[in-house]
Amino acid sequence: MIDNITRSGCGPGEALECPTPNERLLERVTAYTVIAIDPGANGAIVEYRPNDSPGLQVSVHKMPDTPKDIYTLLASIQNSSDECVCVIEKVGGYVKGNAVHCAVTFARHCGHLEMALIALGIPIVEEVAPKVWQKPLGPFPLVPKRKDYESDKAHKAAVDRVKGERKNIIKSKMQKRYPSINVTLWNADALGIATWYMD
Image 1: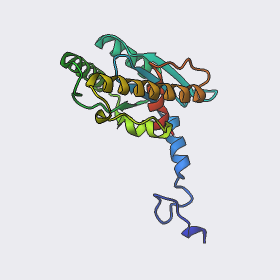
Image 2: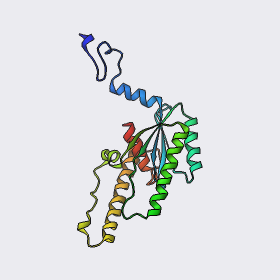
Image 3: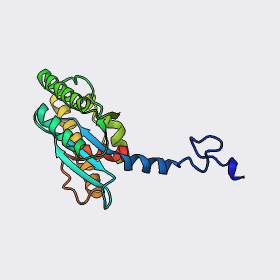
Image 4: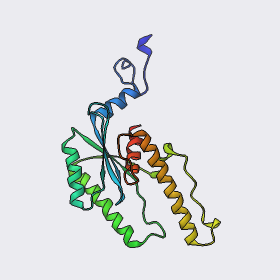
């Protein structure tokens, strides 16, 4: 009987009213502007505006240079939206081999992003690790192991080469997904993060 038909997440008697997963997704994406952030100093901020017509409007912004400019950009996105949520790449701690002052500068930059979002009341709904959002875009070349190289310098050069190949794969996938956008190495990751969240 129709009264006994239920959908995932619905209780008895809710079958006719409770939305399907696709309906829930449509309700979510039409209610919010999604701000996707690749937090690197050479990264980007992407606006994903599903409410705009025709179709989905995607805008990309270079990462601002100063804390005030970060706040101003996020405020302008918020002011032109009914409601915003943020998905941001989850960053780790200090990576061996990186200069300490670079790690400190990056940590401060991430703090500026987070405090601007807090000050504006924009919730971070996802902090996604690179391996997670990149997985649907693969496969990628494997990162070489240190034991396969005679020196740290040779190993680092090989790792950098693989990272470059990975970035170009992501860029190519985003160019196909968003043909109307000038996809570059600086905005491809932020577009990938937005795409992972919306898909």
